[in-house]
Length: 216
Image (cartoon, rainbow, N blue to C red; front, top):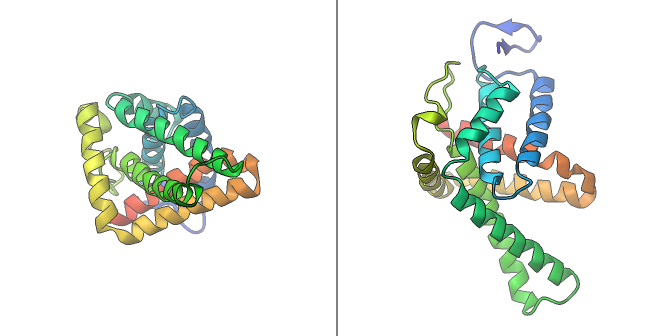
């Protein structure tokens, strides 16, 4: 994929495309696919990792076909099950706590509800950072660089987890921006439930942007 300049013409220098309509369309498309791939919940880490990698490839002018997204999803599955199960269990607990609090049946609501919200927000930010770090660094030369298949699945996820914890503490600005993205996604769904379809795309784009900002 060639880089587009402000006039919409191809630019010989690879880098970040400024064709915002193309990026918007790619974000929505990737988000819908990530949502579908995340339906079993346990596959959510692999789905989001593939989504972030897809937008990275789009922004750096590499192959951003649906075939490459599917291939990255399949590469991300090995080694992701532990995180996937943890994510699924946490999601169920959070939803149950919120539903019980909504109907006034949550014991210790004054303490458990705020704690649930704080842990959910922190977990979401860490989850997005892990998914973003799965694909490694972003190569702005437009070349493939290191592919996800170069490192065994479990080892790659372990590296992504370690790097995500370090990034969360080192890059406070990025962490706050991701937290803001999560908050806005919740607000979107609260305002109009049908917007849940585009939420994965916005979160994937936010994770990719924070990673690119940190690596540049």
